Amino acid sequence: RLDLCIGGRWGGPSSQVMGISSEIDGDESRTMVSEYSNVLKYAWTQPRLNFKGDYWNFEDVPVLPKPVQGPYPPLLMAANSDGSFKFAAQNGMGVVGITLSQSVSNLASHIKTFNSNINKSAANGIPQPFHVVVSLFVAETKEKAHDLMRKNWLDSDVIGDGPPVHSSAIGGGRHDFSSGAGGWGSWNFETAVENCIYDSPEGCIEKLKQLEQSISGMDQCILEFNRRGRNTTEVVQKSMKLFSEKVMPFV
Image (cartoon, rainbow, N blue to C red; front, side):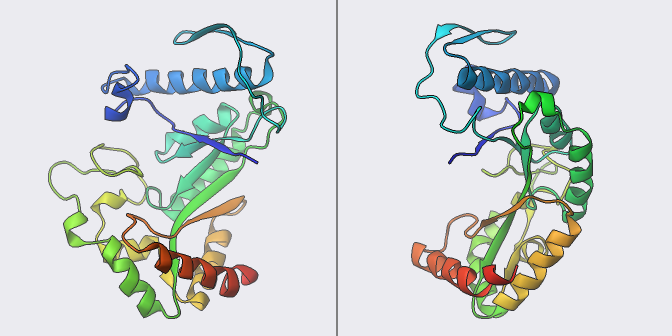
């Protein structure tokens, strides 16, 4: 089973390897994402891909193997900026929001906007879910969880020079990336604790239930256990095991 989540924009250094200018206009970037999401749908549903667009053209191209899921896997879009939620809904996609770039109160508002703009025709009968990613870590005590996660939020990590930087999931360097929680690249540990869930089993249960109540209609809560990846695999696996035994049965 596959859920495919695509990025919501072209532009930036990562697009240059694809021959796309890093300075691409935001509106044009959105138009390109919309067109290419349609390319994916055509590729999965046509015997051979034939597509003529403003940016991409395909003629009689075989796309094999075809998805087992019909008509194609759930198509999601990463939603960091405010406009991404409405855009994804209108283009027949679900969204994956994240509390590292949008506050919970913002997400509670965005889910209403998303639901009011769902486009069943563009979705071709595929559900358009609203998922939320949370940075979470559970340990036997809140103090232990904080001690272990503190190494992922060092003062030296904080982006503090120049204009306000709103960071994507791969770090800083992009201004005005989102308006929500302010961009995790600019956070110290104290700010991270306010927006993430690092706690005992009891604390995690309470905060996850609060999250579910605050973002009414959320489909899935996706958990990220090791932001910046500085804890060892053994430490992360132990936290995951504790979560499965002491938290998951109660949320």
